[in-house]
Image (cartoon, rainbow, N blue to C red; front, side, top):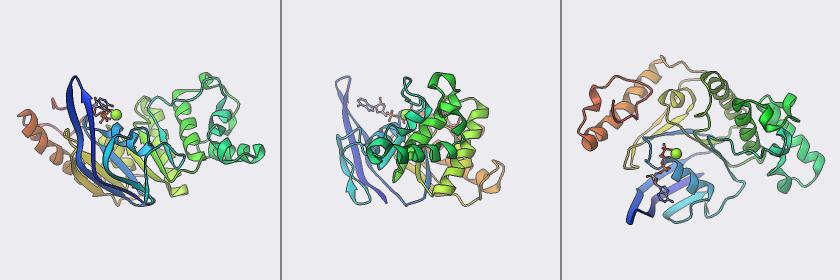
Length: 268
Ligand SMILES: Nc1ncnc2c1ncn2[C@@H]1O[C@H](COP(=O)(O)OP(=O)(O)OP(=O)(O)O)[C@@H](O)[C@H]1O
Ligand SMILES: [Mg+2]
């Protein structure tokens, strides 16, 4: 359903022209949960911004169900790390915000918003103001808001990065539940190898030059354990894929480093 061919993004930075992606290709099928991993600055957010329709100055072909992506559209919903909720609206008003256009009937719009608040377990807080709920709850509101418009693809840019471990774990479980229940196509950017191993049906790893260095399917059933043989094997493949490039780029022997979740830190 999503097809990216020969993607390049050029921009000027400090008087120099920089090229991101270098003919990057990626195809995503309906219902896949794709986690994108890669070191800081490799272009993960830029890729999501292109898919969301915020960044138009790319070359190559980016098609969602054969339609070229050139502007934002509710077919492609995006959630950022910092929630980006409207603080002057309460929880249900936030979830209804984008829906009003799609469902002009007030009662139907309300019912749809409630349905998605149920999905993230927040119906009891529908009238709460945003500042009255925790960070984890705010991110659940942002996810409910994105899902309520029933997008063809859900784009998540490090959505759990700002949360404490407990909230992060809870939301990971919620996301798996949502993915299974709605068969939602998801593109999820994260820095955490563990998170990708726990969630993804497929992991794509980019290196510092925004090249795809690994693209691998995961078969293990959810809920997963990190000591599952598949997780252990794929963790090693991710490390190998990245260490090749790190060795070239930094002259450091990254292959000697211990396997950790901080795999993208070029100093290890
Ligand atoms: N419009 C722009 N103008 C100038 N530089 C840009 C622009 N968009 C992206 N960049 C640069 O492109 C590179 C990739 O940025 P991007 O935010 O996509 O990386 P990232 O992989 O999401 O990093 P992080 O993991 O830190 O979030 C960075 O060097 C960034 O400074
Ligand atoms: Mg980013």
